[in-house]
Image 1: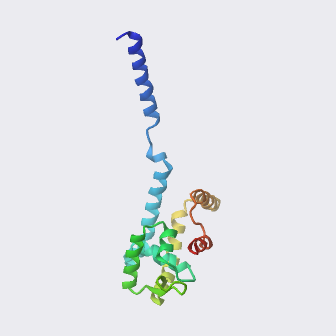
Image 2 (image 1 turned 180 degrees about the vertical axis):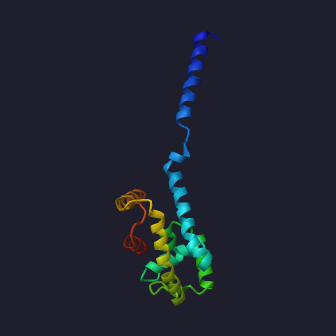
Image 3 (image 1 turned 30 degrees about the vertical axis):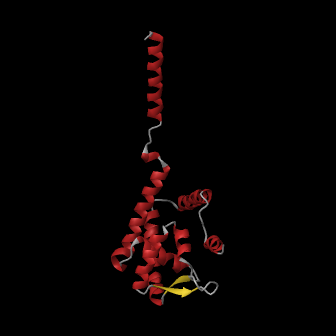
Length: 179
């Protein structure tokens, strides 16, 4: 093979190696990885508040939390949509919470084939007991940030959520459920 061809082959593989080196993914700088890792750690830190004391797992807490902040009953689909949790996971959580008499089904007046979910009196009491503990834990987690950094962080999260078309308020979620 002529030297010129070998030279081109050699330079091409050097260029490819340079591109491969630049295109290596540094997970510790990759935002999706960092957000996922952060979410897992925060979720784990909060779950310690409701897992040991109340025997709730993360999906059960998500159901309880969603029903707790609402005034009206809602569907399991609504909970799955708001929490970005798979329907089958929410269904299992609802069943477990119903077995513990923390959640109950009520008939949907608009469509008698569909049931909606709401907290029982016992579920509401548990929710009310948990909220101050979780808010306190949230403050501990965010204590490394100044008040301005917390506001900025909330604003930046909101921008990312909006860019991904995620529901950001209960009003938005309620409007989506109406469709």
